[in-house]
Figure (cartoon, helix red, strand yellow):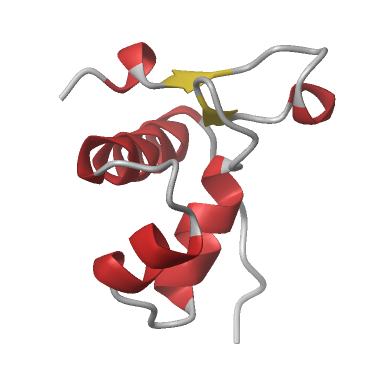
Length: 76
């Protein structure tokens, strides 16, 4: 899966936030849906412009970001 083929960042679209190319569906919206325990078929129903590979690309993009940046958590 080459997420770069399906995810784009354009300052003129969605304020420059990462979204599925050709849509205004933010990667963060897709990932938030999974975090809220939505199933893929539910996400596809909510956003009919999306395809299965768009969702996989969003997940791959999110994984890439975790490799590139460290977020420090408070020790509990």
